[in-house]
Length: 499
Image (cartoon, rainbow, N blue to C red):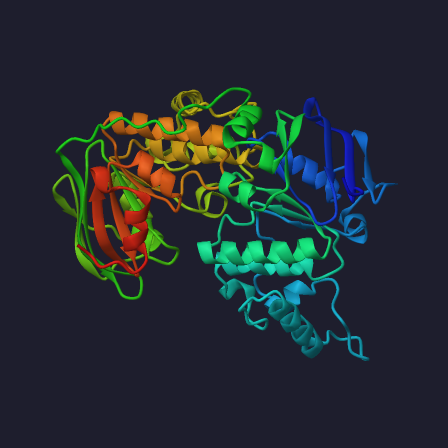
């Protein structure tokens, strides 16, 4: 094997009494893509933050180019050629793409002012060299999530990095953008840059990685050559057991209409939308990025107004002017962006769980009944198997999968009649996914009407009773039974005609 560019040896980390990392080993060679795999909460983020200088280890050593290094801060990491693309986008929204790329490294004029002309030219060269179609003078706040993700990548790779960490880099990208990212990674490999790749998408790991290291509960489990392992072996290493049935689905829908959309339209977003969800039914919404699925769901939930059409709940024509109206009517929505829209990160698990139901926990509309509140929180921590030290733990301290469970708990606490789930397992590990699928199935068995919006075709195929396929703001097909298979869904999601 080639000489190592990075070696992390017996890395341990404690946060107070909690032992998060317990002797982790990891290595990287030039031009290699090495995956770091593990369930949410396994310790991946902590290990990467140690490499990036955000945390310092309690024990262990880090070697770069066979020389021991002491990384005490982010600047130390950068000076050692380490670049990290975090899962959370950390760009400055009111600055341009170019200003974000050169933030803290701005070339100056003779007068000591930022040389905007030079910044724009150098940034445009960088963007063009990576084959991206982004105007560098555009303000970041005007970019899509996918474009922001690509700017993060440009910012990280455009300087002298030799070790690049990518944490869930494809979570917000379309298929075309994912392929573009993989092309960029191939160029990095050719330049002898080592890539640490974190993802829960096995198809990506088998496509672009050379080796895969698995950690579980803070322990190093093992490293496998990608060509010499399988999904089943990796899952078993991750969770400590075999996960034979990822999807749990029992046909439970009844011929009893709960929600109906009739000719819903909003110019530029969706047009002439018609569908029905029955009691106990899981209705899937599939389509490519930009097809209008999330916008339609946000309109149903009252986040903004549709312009034409009607909605019916249990046969009653309802008018929803805002999200509060939706909640009062019995509609809940787990949004695509759990951290930006679903949670208040600096508050506790308990606070977030009861956030949407707080009015119904009041005594005399003045004082919160702490007994009712405590009972409700404990009920959903137990029911959803939320892994937390206590109800008072700050939500930001939980893993992504457990944060997502809290978002779902928040809406279940409102006792909804219709629950909309928009990308409910995005950024969630295989173990937590299995638990969320079991929960969704249980909710349907209890008679809850569910709309499941997902870009994950296996999720749609294995969990839904019927599927609406959207393309360019319209429902092109409604599929059920043996019509629900990958080729059929993709046919209508691209350029297939409605039938």
